[in-house]
Length: 117
Image (cartoon, rainbow, N blue to C red; front, top):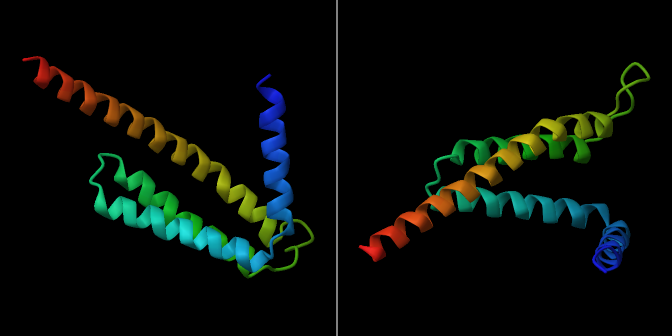
C-alpha cells in the first residue's frame, strides 16, 4: 500500500528532473543553497556550524558539476569527485537534522513544562 505511491513519486521525480535543462537544475541548487544560508543566518541554532559547512561545501562541490573536466589520469573526472564529496556532506547534513530534531523537541518540552507550572 505504501510502496506503490512512493515508487510512483520517485519515478515521476526522476523523469521530471531528467527532462529539465542542466542550467535549470543548477539554478535550483543555487537557490536552495541561498535559502539554507538565509535560514542559518536568521535562526540561531546550536548546530548552525554544521549547516554552514554543508552549504559552503555543497556550493564548492557544485562547481565540479558546472566546470566539468575530463578524467584525470583516466580515472577521476569532475562528476566522480562530486559524488565522492557528497558522501561526507550527507553524513554531516543528517547529523544537523538529528540535532535540529533534538533541539526542537527539547524547546517544546521546556515550553510545555513552563505552561504546566
